[in-house]
Length: 69
Image (cartoon, rainbow, N blue to C red; front, side):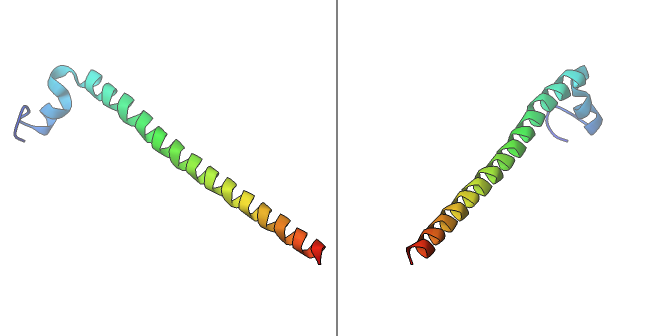
C-alpha cells in the first residue's frame, strides 16, 4: 500500500483509533443503506398505488359506458 499505511493490518488498525474510525464508518454507511432501502420500498408502494388508482378509474369508466348503452 502506498500512502499513510504500510500494510493492510496497519490500515485496519487506523493508528490505534480503529474502534472510533470504524464505528463512524458504520454510523454513516448503515443509515445510508437504510435510506436507499426505504426509498426503494416507498417508490414501489407509490407506483402500486398509482396502478391501483388507474385500474379503478378504468373500471369506473367501463361501468359508465355499459350503463349508457
